[in-house]
Image (cartoon, rainbow, N blue to C red):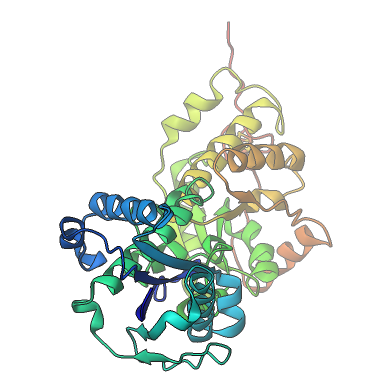
Length: 396
Ligand code: SF4
């Protein structure tokens, strides 16, 4: 076959997820690809995706002939090994194995040299030939470009197999380098997938952060125990959505109190609009049912639904509500509603019975200690203990 030069390139060294893929390649000196084809080969970064895939298919076809025009070996090192031995060593391993694959196809004595475009200066101990490393060869060597096309398209095709697992990663169109968008996506620990490289610094930093929790707050007294019990584990974002509270001056009093404590405790919070009409629409026809029954189920549902919608918008996986603390609330119903909105939206509703371990009593002590306003009825004008007399509607 004569003396031949082997060229090695890789794809996937810099992205924050999945594998690095190396390709070792040489053209057959006795049966080179034709000039027309070679003219089309250029730097893989400068070729349109569609054209790159066509060239890839042609290179694969050439390698399958009885007298191949192209010989190549490919090797994939996944993110687990990258995390175990670091990317530089993983890259070396992918190149070494790609070379070993190629050596199964060509006589080893025919090899003149192994050339790699970078400055890693790996020593491949078990190979007879040592590689030569030179930077920027990829600007002019056809074989490097061909190796790069194979490595890149091969990697892209395998990456696509994960698209259905992580549809919002947009793997078809995004290479997942360390972009702002990637950081935003990962800003919740729950978004880090098992194809991410966990030893990469930005990912490590995110892993060290507390996961976010979106916590629906029905009133400040009921929020005291969740903050005590969850603040060490989660970065909590408080969400106020309680259009069930009447009259408006009572709503304002509870909300002002909530904001005051959030400011003292330095807690991030979000307040939703007072869409009282929505509340009355939801419970229409059920106004006279006793507390904990149908109207209350609708009332929990309305508030939890909105919280789940916000969790999706903010990309926060874990969520729950302070409604879980009151002994006047039906926990089972609450958990079922939480699961209902979690299951269809890939969220996780924390089913914590805050009232356990004396949670309710502890919350009473807390509010007394800090002189926090504590209401004496649930919220709406149909509450059993509404102080101005329970309003009974006559449906007839
Ligand atoms: S009693 Fe409380 S939970 Fe039930 S509907 Fe009224 S505000 Fe909502």
